[in-house]
Amino acid sequence: MQTDLIIEPASAAMQAAAESFFKLLYLDHDFAGAMRRHVAPHFTEHNPDLPNSPAEQLAWFEQRAAANPDFYTAETQWQTRIVHRFIAANYLIVHYNMSVGPLDRGRMFADFWQFDGDRIVEHWDVVQPIPEKTQSGNMMW
Image (spheres, rainbow, N blue to C red):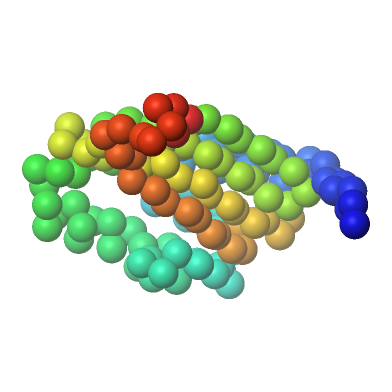
């Protein structure tokens, strides 16, 4: 059985909000600002390692960095390479790799941010450590 996938374009408000959120989070590395400006009060987090509220998430990231300062540099120094970015219907989907310090090989991420109008209401992600080598010989991006 073949099913056609039809993806509707994002609304102008959602497109503008997604672009602003993307810049704050992925380019400026301003997690707190991105979350404060764009997350709805009824936000739902699906990453099992993170708390639900953005304020609690910020505290979680700060505690993690404080517990291992040799591994985690300041958020503004994290290295991010965007591989793919999609804004469609009510989703911002970002596939990227990120390293959080000089001792970190990095991880590949796929983030799925669901919007309701111009506010983010849900987040899912898939995170995979970057290995020294791959069986295929191909990079992960």
